[in-house]
Image (tube, rainbow, N blue to C red):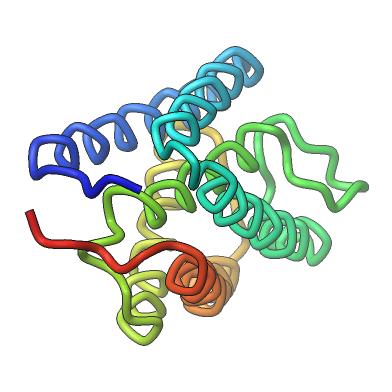
Length: 178
C-alpha cells in the first residue's frame, strides 16, 4: 500500500470533516440516505485506492462498523441517546451513524495511520473526541441524550477507538514517512 503524502493526508482529513458535517446535518434535516450513500461511495473509492491491500482497509472499516453498532446500539438500548431516524425500540443505529463509524475507521486506516498508532493515545483521543462529536451532532439537531449519556459516550469511545487502531496496526503496514 502506497504511503500518503502530506497533501493527501490533508485532503483526506478535510474530506472526512466535510462528510461528518454532511451526514450529521443530513440526519438533523431528515435527509439520512443520500449522505450515507455518498459516504459509502467515497469509502469504496478509498478501498480501491489502497490497491491490493483494499481488503485490509475494508476489514478495518468493518471493525469500525462493528464497534459503532455495539457502541451506539448500547446507547440506544439504554435510552440515554436518541438519534434522528432511529427507532428507540430497536437497538440498531440508523444508517448515518453506521456511515460515520465506517468513515472514522477509514480515517484511522488511511490518513491518520501515520499519526495514530498507539492504542493508549487512541483511547484518550476517543474519550475526548467522541463526546465532542456528539455535542456537534446535538447542535445540528441529529442527537439528543439524557444526563449521563455524554460520559458514557466518552467511555465507549475510549474503548472502541483503540480496538480500531489495534486492528489497523495488525493488518496494515507501518506508516512510512514522506
